Amino acid sequence: MRRMLGLIVGVMLFSAGCGGVAEIPMKESVGSQLTEAQKFSLKNLDGGVTDLSRVLTQKKLVLINFWATWCGFCVEEMPDLVKLQAKNEAKSFTVLAVNVGESAKRASSFAKKHKLNFPVVLDQDNAVSQNYGLVGIPMSFLISSDGKVIGEYQAFTPELVSDVEKNLKSSQ
Image (tube, rainbow, N blue to C red; front, side, top):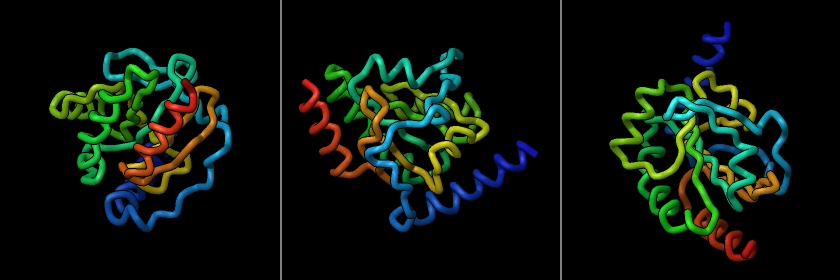
């Protein structure tokens, strides 16, 4: 049953996310606090576990990016995310990439090939994606250290960059 649910969610993410990103209705979570269910702990590519609550205590801003290797829009935005991370890492910012529904081997191979400079975690059963109400990927959430959702983005946009810069500047 759980496997079937994962398959259904995967098909929905594929058809919604990579088929028409601009037309996906977003859940109105901007300004709200993360729920306990959204504060995930997931396996990372090093074989350990990354805990979002801990990352939030270490960083002023976290951009949670949901993606998959088969999603063309996801692949397209990765170089921009790498640049955003490089530019702002020293300012207590990180991208936290949540790979949706794929194996560690596939995600790791992609991360190495594309020289990802931020942590990648694995949502292999799509439970975290469901907790965030995703209807497509790529999808990113900008989160402050206190767990407040600052922004939602369906792809890498100038608005995302502006929000990161504005919030890093205001928290200095």
